Length: 315
Ligand code: SER
Image (cartoon, rainbow, N blue to C red; front, side):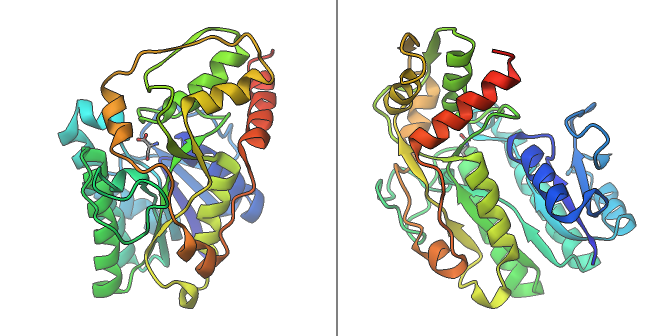
């Protein structure tokens, strides 16, 4: 069996995915890559390659040399940063993905798993229980690249038989690596500020609902999708749903532990992005095809998150 490569391994999801893959398969079976240098998260626990996913020659060389047979392609520019520099987001997200798919095609990589997002939907999609198949008219460049990425995955499967798989992640709440440049980052910031006992100014209005998922569920989902037998899959891209939360609901859950936690709301340009996305997704296909089911509700997540952050920040 070949090894598993994770691109964007130093990012919010990539970093925890690498740790989980090491637990499951052993450190000699996992290769981490990122453009961040130095990236010290893994503390010599795994082979780490500095890699820009835009460098297709280097990517191919590494995949061949390391005998990679599964790629988790996690390197991407997120929505908020993407709106500041849409051309760069296009370049990294689209060229990065096609480089990975081309590498997979040419070198016979067995599987490519890469996340899509709730950002694939735009304002005209149904807000609640948004189905997998519905209009995809995103209003962010990030969303545009996610929709195009989904289609590219489908194309490579139909034309070349590359086994690409994707899931539409909601905002991911996690305690280990900070998210970078997403619209949903405030959810993590709320918990961090509570633990540091600092007031927080939230850039999303208090009653704006968005879909969220706790990191252990996010890791579980992507691994379940990756491991599902090919014949169980009825599609390439799956909605996954866990929580639908407003900032006010998250704050109320945090205040059960930190009653004096103070939050002010000052919506900025990210409010419009949040309002263009669904509140919750219908994930019947993921549940039926590969047994998806989240474990964490708001209270369980909040308790776990706060405990982990207290340790992390020595509180
Ligand atoms: N968390 C992402 C973002 O906010 C959504 O996919 O950009």
